[in-house]
Length: 411
Image (cartoon, rainbow, N blue to C red; front, side, top):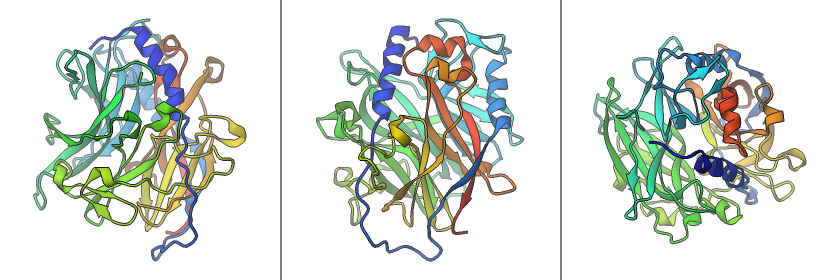
């Protein structure tokens, strides 16, 4: 699948607009809470040069030219045999010159999956035919491109109670359009099924096709997915950012083993779990300090004991600086209310990143990689919004980077 650099450049430029979004509603007094639940926040952090370096090593290896040299998205799922899948959205392939640069117009695909060994070494990239996207695109009736971006994935029984496991990958389906929808009109939330251990793509199922005529009101699910008590909680957001308004977070839940069954999904309506996706209500996320701070629509959620933690690139940031600070919110339940924000860290850019105008976004937690001290592994994406040429001149400007977070709180 080949695209012009002009299209990519326009998309990168709009990313800044799409990410400058607040999910802000005032937190009410009173929280029913749970035993052992309480404030949870980041108290210290340290760059994880080992994991950052592993992605650089793999991306710079020219032994194959049809594998990953850079991408964003970068969520992970641990497999039963100890391997880890890393899900990549827009992914560059081709050669890397001197560990530094790509050709000016490299091959790229809308999605791919990287396979990491149990020992932590990236070994291969899983693509579709061509090479093309693993999760192939479609075409609108008028011929416009429809693509799929993978978000979070989980391993679950093929059916409830089954001993056979499969990987369910949440997908955002998007359709090419003009501004303000350079990143595509949101069309549907889908779930792909990958067989284990082969990783063969078996099927893609549409879970929800939002009915709203205004694309900005449509909610796509999958930015995070967390298992608790036999349920998978799937988080998402609408996309009112395209209209210059605040985006809003939502959550659904699905019984384990039924993620690919649309009828099994239940959506939080503010008071109860409903079958109708259109009844979903926005979550209460934080309380604005200056009317602008809040979460972006690519946030991550994890659970420690009975406390839930949401981490996001701050849409406002201290002093109004955009996309510079990762902040946290905590809750005693996935449906909130989420209290915060608390500043966690200002993720460091690669050398030369500030001069190139790079930004950070899409922080994602990887709990399967907790170290012996219980520190959480967090990745974040780097990009240059105004210049796709910059990320080819310096491949480090479009690759994930990693930090270790120390958390203090219950448990």
